[in-house]
Length: 159
Image (cartoon, rainbow, N blue to C red; front, side, top):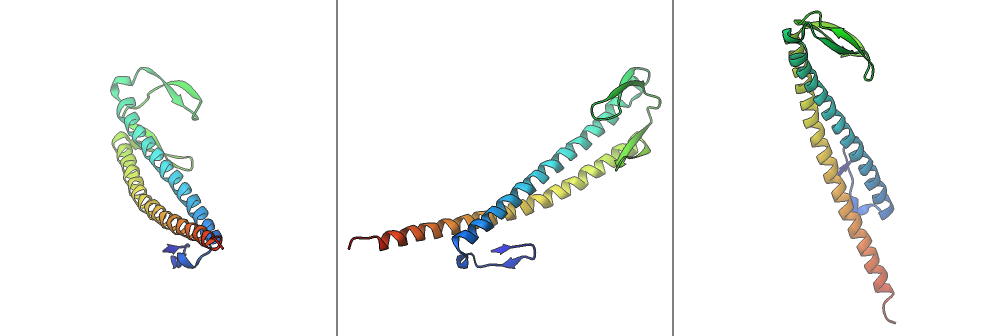
């Protein structure tokens, strides 16, 4: 079984139950962390899809003269009117905004969604590999515990 960051091969049968428990705990933590990262990537991907929907539906000629709420932060909105139905400001990261056409903005967000999709797929493979390693460690640990119990019962037999 491969463990560690360098991909070292370790014979699980040669480890004590305490060492196996530590390996299991470490793998549990890694799987939990990677699962949380997976969820965060999915959430980010959905936010980019929401951005595309906002550009398609919220920035159109039909809403040009209607009042709308402009987000200043995630919880603060101010009233405003759409000045230009053909151009939007796109947050390209770390607080920087770039003016783009609505088509370019949609292409930008689609590119982000595709990039996140690739990262999600890669992360899925890693999580599955770690989960398989965890199952192997749990099985070896279970066998060692059972063997220890049976050994203890054999020595405590009738005399």
